[in-house]
Length: 340
Image (cartoon, rainbow, N blue to C red; front, side, top):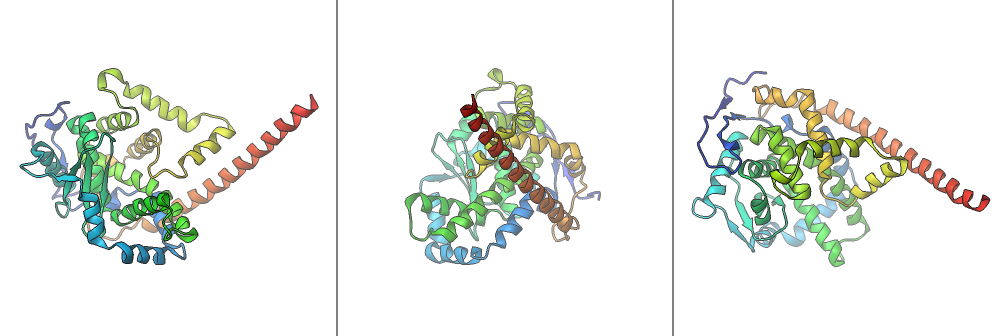
């Protein structure tokens, strides 16, 4: 559907280490988050909510911690970004909020740490933490992608479960008694959903900067560091394709196992997923103004769930077949050693 309200901003003339902020971007007026959400994100969340103990675990964590202590714990060692503190980043943040037409301005904090990362957290009152290591590594347009990515998490209502995931991981690492077998089952489900939710927010981040090269270049830097002069985006894309398509049976098994306890998919996988979404034409349609508005039903939602559920079933069967095949081969190789 065409968007009569959607408009483009004129270049703001702001400084940018890469010169990318001078391009006009379409303001995605009143865009509904389901316009960018990945079907696997929706399906994983539905599956998570079907875990019998899920609601009980959620209530226990709420009852034990509450909103305010969690917010204070995350924000205690960080600085609130404002016009007077990190003013340049604040200006970039306001631009990202405007492009995605976010319903409100969420508190943004800068945390001093060399780890290159960012996160959106909270329960009823979401906020964003931006690590100083991320700011040091990335150029302005790349940082705008990261900020837009986190805004996407908030607009898609991911932050509650993201916060739960971090809390459960920390409690499990400390051996806290609240994290029993039931909570660990919830944590495994949360991690599976968390990885899928990143695919949705990668799309939101792209819509925030509206430049696929910027997004993939950011993923290259987040994966390996380095400057534009010492890296090649084209080679990274080739690497992503090789990872997706290459390897023997055992390699495919290890690819799945390597991801099991990660909160985020590997960047080579995220590059491939984002390129696939662009190739469907959905990204271009949204930038043209053809997207669902807030308050409108998601007509594709049930179909998305059906497709994603089918993909999960097929993927599970393929994984089990792969494991069985790998086990047979391993047994055959083992036995052949005695026959020589």
